[in-house]
Length: 127
Image 1: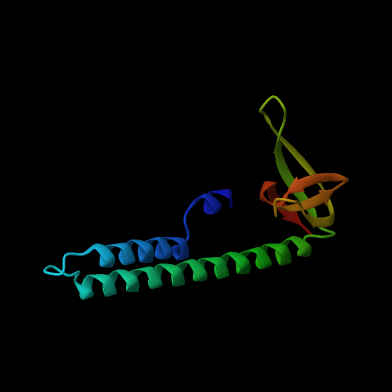
Image 2: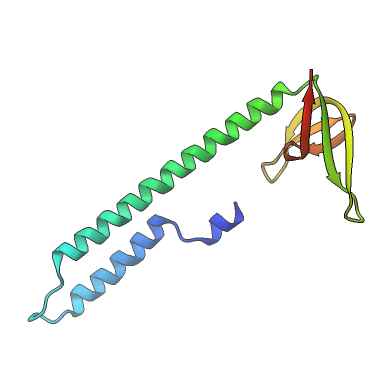
């Protein structure tokens, strides 16, 4: 989510555009005024961009909810997982999921035999 924070939102872009538009209107040549059609089209595009951002945020929230539900359904099941060792090699382990938590970064962490495992590291599941 850090990359989203560094990218300007549609609202920020629209605000900047409106400031630029006001400046252009204040300094325009009265003999060559700005074209209303172009301004309207640009404002409509900003509105569509903002709606798409809202839709994307809603989908992201829904995906988080589905992942949390899925993770909680793994409690009591045996999972196999892969983790990366300090030397860079992949290690495979198995164990029963005891608990599901969310860390400070919003990642889903499974507690497997007293070891924290990312949900994304699970490679198979058994009943």
